[in-house]
Amino acid sequence: MARRDFYEVLGVSRSASEAEIKRAYRQLAMKYHPDRNPGDASAEAKFKEINEAYEVLKDPQKRAAYDQFGHRAFEGGAGPGPGAGFDFASFADVFDDLFGDLMGGGRRRGAATRGADLRYNLTLTLEEAFTGKKAQIRVPSAVPCDACRGTGSEGGAEPQPCPTCRGMGRVRAQQGFFTIERTCPTCQGSGRTIANPCRACGGAGRVQRERTLAVTIPNGVEDGTRIRLAGEGEAGLRGGAPGDLYIFVSVAPHRMFRRDGTTLFCRVPIPMVTAALGGRVEVPGIDGERIEVAVPAGTQTGKQVRLRGKGMTELQGRARGDLVVELVVETPVNLTKRQIELLREFEKAGKSAKGQHPESEGFFAKVKEFWDDLRD
Picture 1 (cartoon, rainbow, N blue to C red):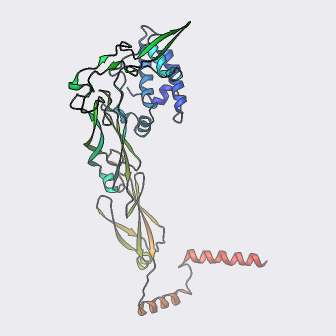
Picture 2 (cartoon, rainbow, N blue to C red):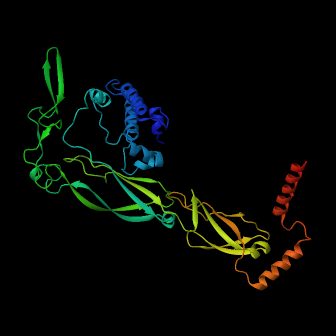
Picture 3 (cartoon, rainbow, N blue to C red):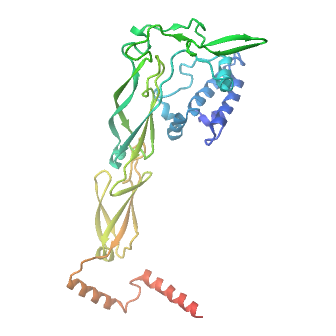
């Protein structure tokens, strides 16, 4: 069954702001949360779908990837799937996520913190964009510490529950009729403490290192495309989930072709004689093919010849767009004495003939009418 558009799931437009997306999620999550709809399988499925959509659209980078590629951006384990490994939070957790920023911050659920997303700029030639490319890229980032296996504790020992807050990350204090809850000062809200921090990483659970990644760029990729590699960003703190790596693709300008989607444009100069008498010229294809183009007699500058199926490949497809050849009539320079004499004879022979230069004859006829109107 086809998956619904995430914007449609939340009932917002594609231009919706972050505040509008959060507001829509808040209303739907509270309406369909299983704690409010016990035993209702349809409400449970709806709640899963709402959370999946919100997890993507609340993150600017994930949202940008979804806008570019749709659901394909998160296929193959690259992002959240409908109901895959989903664990319902309590209704209080949903409330805390939605309103925690108004109450001094949401609750901390452990020392693990998700790693940061990374950006890598990759420049391709137009030929590489046409065929696709398998590239090796080197990315400096934080990776899990081998000495402590990412826990931040010497020898890989698991952090212990904080004795002050007993693992909750929050402590409460009674002040008159009110109970005040604040971040635990001992564990800083993590809920866990490390008795012996790892000496290799200083207790962070990660170290800086350069990694080499194999990246497959699909054929037909366009300038400005963003490709998301899930889990290839920075390692999380103390065993937290890694961030994502976003590859921003730019396609360098080509010396012969100009691109518009799957259509390529090539400007081809032709000799004046070929333009007048007709003939054939050879132009290159983006795949290296030699293509013959027929030039009709009397061709003028700007005439376009469209070659079907000779342009760029579609994204991840085999179909190709068109190659548009724009013919430009070139006026000869550095003429010999004999060539000048022949052109003078050509000019003299054509003075009495009409219709050989329709554009210039039509233009100067309009000029004459314009001057006549001014005299009247």
